[in-house]
Image 1 (tube, one colour):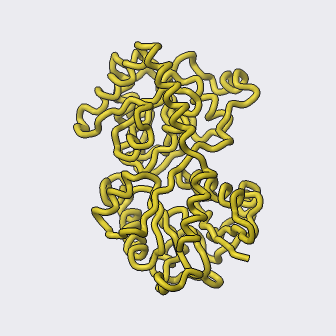
Image 2 (spheres, helix red, strand yellow):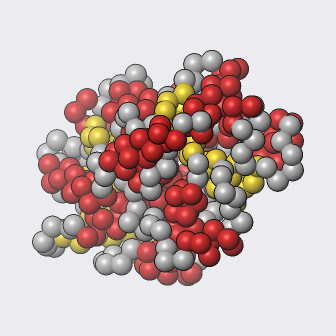
Image 3 (cartoon, one colour):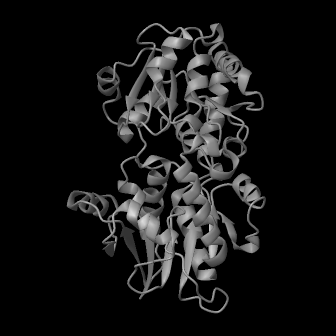
Length: 379
């Protein structure tokens, strides 16, 4: 029996973010498409019993869950300094840069292998949008991956190209994309949920962790400009780092109280309702490795306005309206104009909705999982 061990720690992190969703969806798909004679196990830092049970509930079919004796921060530090603390070696798939990397014969020992996922190059391209500690840790783990990883997974060709500017991984890099979860679907009671969420008839929606790199601040300023027609802005996502105070930014921009609302974390059913009823979905992120919310909005037929960050532009293709990031001081004005162009043109909004649905169908977690299994087989 061949076992693939997957790092699933981010799923139960305090702020799972996009990586947590990625880890859950990919691991579930890896279990579903596992070849005959193979199993999938999980690896997680020391957590509560409820967290372990939650992982097992969300990942049905997981053969075993290895529970590290180290808490998340201690485990990250141990792996940064080369202390793997895993029973045995074998095949390990890290769904982020948190990986037990060690010296081994990468060319001749295919039974022991570690694959690491680089979600973006933000620690290098936009270090100011992360904590100094986060930048230092990511750079240290990247250096270890350069020495010891058997392969590197990135979600877009844009990230693969960026990666060549910092590390020469050569043929160790594979591009394996993300996809929309099957759980993101309209529930049987959308009207009831919309009423409970107090959704206005028309609104602009943004989704993402509340931190500087997500571009929420320039979006709030954009929504105060005439082109945005005074529509409410609803922001979905957990609080991250960087003290992004939505209420203060909204007040400074001149919004009346209540026009900009934060809804925190929502379940998939509520999120699907929000996506489907939004007049426009805006993804203003300054830097991304993929930009999954763009595909999520498109899958539900919502017209999308997005930044022209390379990875986001690659994922959206021609199914959204890109907004240039090159002049930060006028970025809010450009965002407002793009939003206004959709609000003013029903035909454009419908066309974007149709294009988006087609674009979202080009990605699937099953396909991504099959590529991961093939990658490990190739190694």
